[in-house]
Length: 498
Image (tube, rainbow, N blue to C red; front, side, top):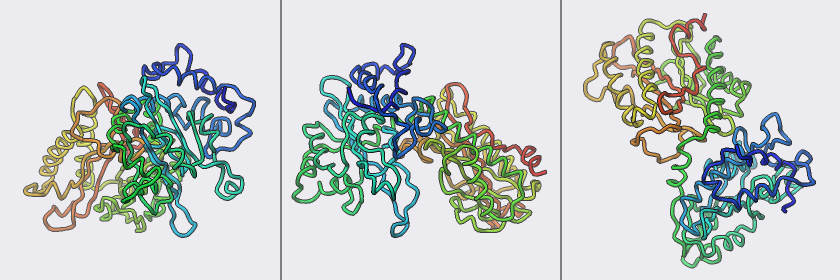
């Protein structure tokens, strides 16, 4: 029996007959037995320090059984099992953690883990490599997690590390080791592999040991691990992971809902206040995301007053807000690495002018129609719903006096209606928007109109930029709006302004 941490008692309950384990996990008795073998030990996790919160050290952040907020250790096992089922016999998947990125000198940015690596491991530290190798005999697999070792001197400066023992006992790796020995460890692991799947970017200058090793496989005379990689069939991992990450579990949807609820409430509270600068509104939203329960902001907010709203990714947020203008705010919080994506547009004065209200309601009606189509039984793709948005907006704008001939719609509505969301704001990169939406997919719905200040357009609307965006989970018969706490009806917005 491994001498695991007391923390692993949180794995006990999922093994009851009512656990609801997926079929793929039930077919891996070795893995279930391995988790069960880690339930008891003489060392309490509460007396130890890890590189991220665990339930025993941070019970205010994680429930018993959770490896990261809202996501159980069992779910991470299931995710790895799903990936292993897509690999060929003796196939190997290799994933590298994100590197620490530096602003200048020794001044670093906030660390954000590579989403694929996090999705499969729950491990939230840099300088780590995960390897999943499918067994030859069945659909079982072996999980290797190579990490930074415990180092009291380094930890005094940089904060706690989890270390190799925790990689096994907390993160359920079959084997761990010092990332500094990655070449030796990985050479042994991938020796005899039928195929190697990885999206790690080769870089000779990267601080990531694996990125440097992978880069060296392309030199004329590779040696060691580089030579092994050079003789393997290396394939991209992206499409396999997209297929798995694309459909969200109930736990993932719950995390997205928490992020959406906290973020939506922040927007509604912001609409109650009087604002004179973009900077102050930006600071308030980011503060309220955290106060309402999010860990941080999901992305750099767009807070654009007046004509600034015509710049889709305006992030300077340094202008004044004028009484008769609208302000467009595109922002969201992050909970357990899952994000919310919201845009609201409202009048600084608290009351829409008639032209502002007319254009706003045209966009809102389009958004309502498109959200209603985000259900599996409608068999629409994001591209098809985008086309419906274009047709609806074109008709509504013509009724407001816009000349919609030629490239008018392309100028006024220059972006797509929506994108997939999850661990990333633009989740599962490369995922097609042509396929019909499926239950469990999560998307944004964000029609917007941006009117240039030129005489081609009706004078009453020139310089306006309005976008309305919600995060939505596709269900079988109806959509679930994840960000409904952010008000968007004209009457509700004006009531807040009063």
